[in-house]
Length: 85
Image 1 (tube, helix red, strand yellow):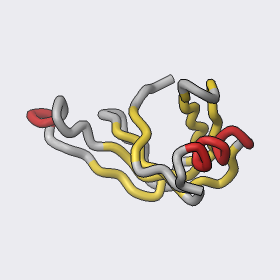
Image 2 (image 1 turned 90 degrees about the horizontal axis):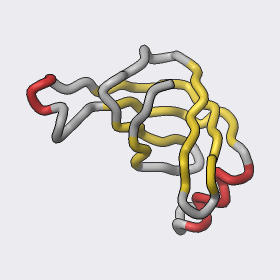
Image 3 (image 1 turned 135 degrees about the vertical axis):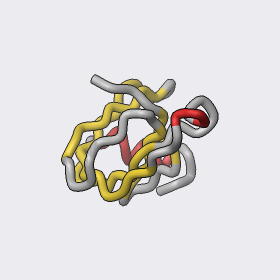
Image 4 (image 1 turned 60 degrees about the vertical axis):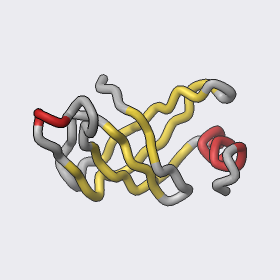
């Protein structure tokens, strides 16, 4: 299991900030630990990746974009709670 921070989330996709970047086209399961909802699960496909040089990884770790293929009900509640749905 790897870890990162979810950013730019919407019903169609999200971006994960992390230094470990999978190849485009890979399907994966993402678990988001939300303070209000607990664990939220998303199945998605990597659609783009952004690598950064290791000299700036502490400031900008890079990451990857994910197209949401399926998600549990809690994911859509998370969007609604943040005014994104």
